[in-house]
Amino acid sequence: MARTYLKKATLTSVSDAGEVRETVTNILNDIAARGDAAAMEYAAKFDKYDGNILLNEDEIAAAAAKVPQKLKDDIRFAQDNVRRFAEQQKATVSDIQYEIVPGLIAGQKAIPVDAAGCYVPAGRYRHIASAVMTVTTAKVAGCRHITVCSPPQPGEGVNPAIAYAAQISGADKIMAIGGVQAVAAMAFGLLDQPKANIIVGPGNQFVAEAKRSLYGRVGIDMIAGPTDSLILADAQADPFIVATDLVSQAEHGYNSPVWLVTDHRPLAEEVLRLVPDLIADLPELNRENAAAAWRDYAEVILCADREEMAATSDEYAPEHLTVQAADLEWWLDRLTCYGSLFLGEETTVSYGDKASGTNHVLPTSRAATYTGGLSVHKYMKIVTWQRATREGSKSVAEATARISRLEGMEGHARAADVRLAKYFPDEKFDLTANG
Image 1: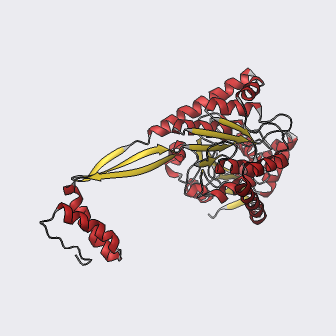
Image 2 (image 1 turned 180 degrees about the horizontal axis):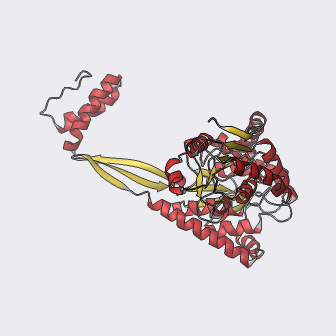
Image 3 (image 1 turned 90 degrees about the horizontal axis):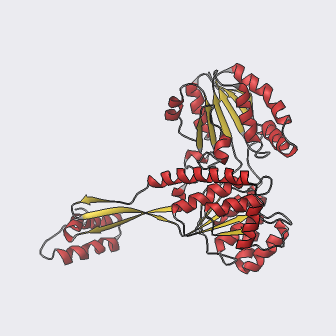
């Protein structure tokens, strides 16, 4: 049967891109022209903070002293998990060399970018885990310098737990600055920081637009939209847990889509019954976000079977994908488009968001059809090299000359010709386009 929508979204997660883009462009242009002074003016205007922007060691130590020991232990637990997983990821990339033809050797080398800029949000929620995720992976990758920017709170500065998490994860500098001005400061190398080669981390629509605008001048992790989550559940799933997991992700923001895809109508109907009460039980801010997201963006989709469920999931390409269904290995083999996959009731997106070790900076808005999330690989350049003996270059030079002439690129052809003439002066070669 065709998919049946028991609940259909009335809105899509698209911001007023034109207005945001104009605002961001104006700010970036002003900061590019006036440098530190402009960045500090925007920081004072938008952050409403008059303390030091670049935290010194005493300020970082004072912030750490405010963090309860139990929370420090939890942050270290999460950081250790992220670090160990990142180290395993890095181990999958190695320098190689291979003799393509006798005498011609080509190689691959993995080189970390020099300087990374990590943005850690602290507006609606204090994203302690983002400091762990972004900084730890950059450190494991081998970045020489890591700058963290996080929006300060009036009278407090950078959230103490964020400052602590950034420090233990390997940040070289921590800056009390947020928004577009923070992204610009990292990209342009302001306030005595090196220019970032890559800027990573989640943020609001202004931060996301600033990263998009600067892409090319610097690298970025991805162009991120509102967070989204999808659950695949069959008859064996616990509807209360499914409903709880949907609500837990809807609280991210008013425009954060959550989707349930199932082949079992009674499960879908029970989840639809449970969700409103679970939302009503949240604290006020969380409740407002989750209620709006569920009302306007959530969908509940009934499918004929698990194959149709999987196809629907791949079409949606969710940032977070949870499977609460039988035969988890089948789902692992079958599913192809997601940012991060959570298999079975015993794990949940919240684990990945905070402490299990995989990264929570992930592709949104169907970007999972073509990219994965933040990892050590995002901080590394995979470059190639080659060398050859004169004999080894002979066949390559002949092919290069003929292909180049067929393309009409005579200069390329002559770069091959001169080597053949120098290395093999007594030989004749047919280097015309017709061979």
